[in-house]
Image (cartoon, rainbow, N blue to C red; front, side, top):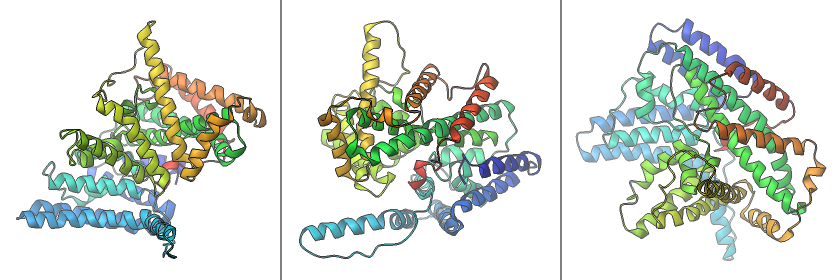
Length: 477
């Protein structure tokens, strides 16, 4: 079930009505309803993989309690590593087994050995990377005594399976979500209004921006060998807005839906394309994943407290692992490596924390420098996105090579496709709307919100009939 589907448009009001008007006696009945709704939401994708979600929930619930009760360090470590190994084992089998098997086979073949690997014919369970990381952070926090184990199974189950974040995040922490799950919620009209605005803006990002840009990005990337420099640049920009609108749109809808139920989720995007350097970009893009790797991988590895080589090593590890988290393909690993290379000069010059304030422009030379920094960061990001989007590393290099060698800036693709000029104008308007509202969570709340919502819904309906591209990109991760 997709957020941008008719089924979800029917599902959400039903759950909302039951939650506030039928199961509103206490938080336990509300939590039980949300668990049932979450399992139904997940089963609409493929009910056969519900067992993975249920098993992961039982595993981390039980091992968390055993870690807390452990009378010796040996016992605590046993349950801790059991949870880690089993969780990562399931993730590895479903997501990475075929990748490693095929990669090793190719390596041996290059040395003259004929190898026929046994590959698994399985579908990647949607959301497995997200709910696995929910459970891992919970168990790790208990082991290091940052939190207490949760003994209420219903409350813990909701923390893992809560449907707004179940299949594509944000990646929540037990320290943030569990306390809210354990409290009785009262309906807050203002929060509900904020939620509706955030849902509508998320749908604008997904339907109007992402799905429309996807039509043109796919056409250009699929036929890049016949495209000129201008068309290829356009394709990279289209994909940049496709993936931003798609993923941040999903996150906005998830946060907005959750506000309807009186629960706040972690903010996952903060206008990342207005970043002045790559470090700032990663503080604004997929915030829940970046902070997860920082807290559970980078800092345990030593963070930036060690010597220079340790800082460099740890930086490359988290970026490469982040790329690998996105998918079992060398293109994602190279994408992570490229971002580590981008980050390295900032690390070496100790300037990776320079841009932590909001962007402010004035009529002076400093503002011109800021604008240049934003555009340059966006350029670097688009180059990296080419590797993320390409089918193979070779395709990515050939795509970039054609940009710098073809040097033909005629309006080739613009003249061949309908509405291409209109799409460029639409993306430009979208950027301006976000720019002038960059200090807000989303642009359409506040004054004249009803008019903004009406205009947004009109745009959603108009563009929703144009594109057949409906699925969210991050469902595959």
